[in-house]
Image (cartoon, rainbow, N blue to C red; front, side):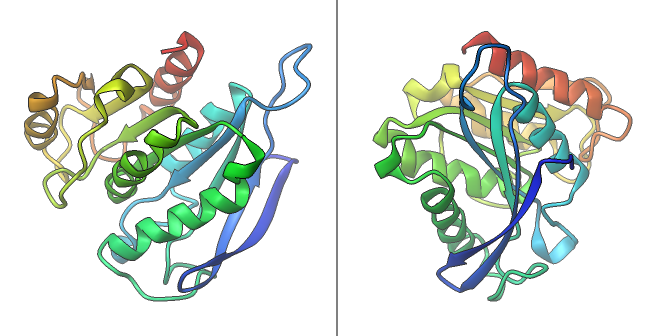
Length: 217
């Protein structure tokens, strides 16, 4: 993605995990990145990879805001070993990536982000990791609430979580996301006329994520 993109091979429960790490853009006076953002891609059985344009857009937003961004391929995708596991194994993949790129013992802050199927998996990672007190932000885009059981966002994580959905998403209807969010009183940011892949609206998506990260909320 930039001159400071590094390819990684990590260890996962199903074998090797292929990943890339994009170095943070440090603000003047900043000695180190704000933390590590781990970003999950859309459905592996429908062409989803870590090079998806929405995933790369999320990575750019985090990098711009001073975060190291790590994208990775779920099991069975690209150079990652294993076979698709309907989200359960993929959650273990994500947690394995987190522990290797931002180990708890190192005390690094983390952010979690995902698109579509990746947002579903990320929701469960957030539920698992939030109690540890290390997650600063979560970003869920095109959350696949009509296709999977998305975990509720921990109540005290609401202000730290950005949920974005396209008004005209024909893959995951907006109504399904609202049905998931409504019992939680969790706000959803709707992009007018936006589709599932946000064609022509990726700069807007990026700006929404940047604004969220810079707001401190």
